[in-house]
Length: 465
Image (cartoon, rainbow, N blue to C red; front, side):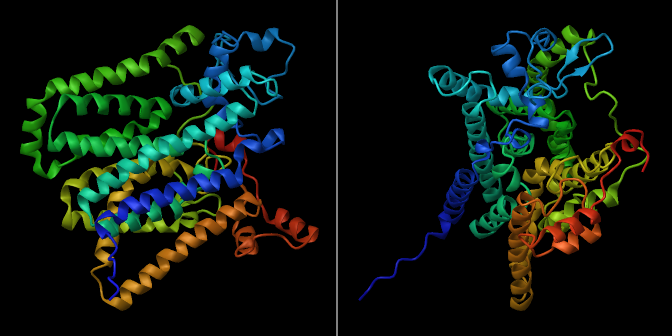
């Protein structure tokens, strides 16, 4: 007799985790985002220039004040290498905070060493070795982030639910695009840090130890240093188990030293940024996004969620399962409901109040990727609830789920082939290219381009709709 070997479902989420890592690394080496020859499509470009500028300025030019930009004959702006803002005192200030440079730095050092030892590449901070190793940095942090997301979910759900959730988050959302096509943007890094932060928050509440407090301080400092608006993630530990207010208050007062230590670590990590602003601008706190602001009296919430111009749920409809799950949390997991409902509401409100609510060149609403780790909890609860329904309902919803994953990957191909424009999509242009991978003729391209509508950036900066 042949003995049937049963699959080890107690390890299903581990197998899923490994499979997802293989898919992403295979996709990276297929796409090879570090290989683009065209300057305007180079990996170190647009926002990444600002994230990254601290490293070549400090380690190659030995000039964090960027005075070499005026003294050298090289046109760094035209070469897409340094795009500083000018502060009121005339200082050249890098637009973004230095968190991403901190995460890039080990890989920058490897790339710089390789470039210097090679006779093939310039050791200027922008040749292919730097781009290649920066790409690997994205994958490295993703390995860690997905690991801790799986560990968080397996505490709450079954192996099956955990596996479906991480597949959906990785392959069914625009996170996949920012892991493979534009891997060095900040969003996949923030996703990974927040995944780890959520896990250690729960660990600290389960067993308050000083080592967990130190880890949380480091993670929170990095999260804030990458994108200051992500300070909102502190809502999670503040409101976690708020339905058990007496127990939580007792726990916090017993461990005030942990909280002070975590807070001190956050301050220490953020201090170099404050010192940098003081040196360059003369102010300890400085808005380096000069001329850009939030309009809290005019949030574009509906546009942010549903617009053809990068609307979150239009391009990432699978995340509607997370919104359903937040409702379910109220009835089944109240300790997660209050932090999730407050965080999600404030996050969407604040992000949709930014003057450029479509966030410039983007695939879908990229700013929401940072929060997918925390939104994975209600997503998992939705999947758990679906698995308990009648077969016909269950099968219908899972077919819908599979179609959402397919749609996401199809639209990633469309975005790569420019059939989804980065900031100018309209209802007419979206439905003209829906279901198409390529244009059949030059005439079709011209019709498509006529249907696009570029946003007026100058009016948007003034808060004009």
